[in-house]
Image (tube, rainbow, N blue to C red; front, side):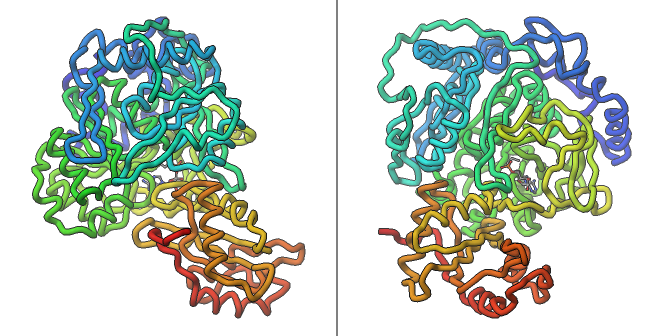
Length: 599
Ligand code: WT7
């Protein structure tokens, strides 16, 4: 059994003094492999490694991620629910026991094999949040294939780019699904030449058996694309076994899990949170993971609270954007449900503002539940910073580094200074990350007392509702429009989404109809990236400020869009006469709300 009963050394819920954390943390840094050794036995091994680290993580170890997340629990607790799914409408519910999950995984693995998928092959997964999506990830893990999940909100072009860049051999999808009362087509978005495994019309016997492909410390588990500062998304590659050790251990300690926990995370498998803390960590520990494929406000704004009450959820993990949007609705949506089963709350994806924190703590948690504000990234695989205490938390601060992870703030940037098992192996077409001695996170941070406050991205990444999108990706999409001569996209704060995109556009002709231009911009970002990507503000300008060498001075444009009185980089502009035009267009931008009607 993965979770040992009783208190363990790092059960910080019983630590009354911050000094106990300090001491344990320091000891874990002195000898990180000693810390990780304590958790190596949580994994069921085919061959156990001698130590957690020697030259590489779990060197010499042989195991399988699917075996640890499914088979061993199907043996010990076959009837326990592994996944509970809630659909778009009230009452749409499915319960998948560990034994049923094992069968489902076996079946999908057999289908993959029938398409010739072998160990090391990349398999795309383009599915809504249904149990089969999780089973598809696990089926890949079972046969040693590398999954590549693409969020169902990404466009056909974005999907094609990811599939072709990573040489995917097959893709698992369905025809369509329903969310927020609307039908969304999926299969028709696959516009490249690839084996399509359509789960709607697969017929294969229920009792298929596929052998486990044992994985060693070098084998890979998945690729997931995320945004950086270039115009193209980057594929982040994670290992199988070291990644599993990291997500399982962080989950166990940070959420202080118990074997009878019912855990509900509202993310989607299209993001890293859905990989690490919907699929792998909870199933590794044999818990019940609750998933929801609907919209939190459809048909009413109580879907999360209704699910928590019905399933007696004890750990709830969501994002600040969701909290802020639900906070806007009447408290009665929360209060009509009995949420007394909750023990721990979590937040992830973006900084949580104090007002949202307070509402989450008081209205949802009834002042009983600590809030784990967890900071991490696609690249780190699992949580790096969390409050690591249950009492006297600091609203809005992500807190302290996890055991065994050494961090620092250098020139205002959060960096990781040592090796830890969660860090990605490589980034497709960019190996710079893991070859450096330090891992630069790209996030600005400061200490407030002994806690860390995350200030946000320092690079050209915009965090919209916890979704990472590069300004350059927006610019590439907008540049495709014939009527656009030049474009610069910058981040501006947004009350609900945390941040949003502000686009400066220089049209080819000055008398362009702004309405037509805006429609083209929205259509192009939708087609190139997906329905989640769209600039909320568009400013049409005659020209952009440039440097002597012809580079757009984006920092200045960002400052102006953010209303900063004395913007930076003014000195480097060779055409200062454009600045007044830029300023006046910013005072009156075209606002394109989400409900914007398109032809
Ligand atoms: C970026 C990573 C972590 C899984 C989901 C997002 C921001 C993430 C927090 C937090 C402040 C946060 C950072 C980070 N971020 N969590 N608790 N407080 N900012 O993963 O898509 O790779 O994005 O999200 O800016 O760099 P991701």
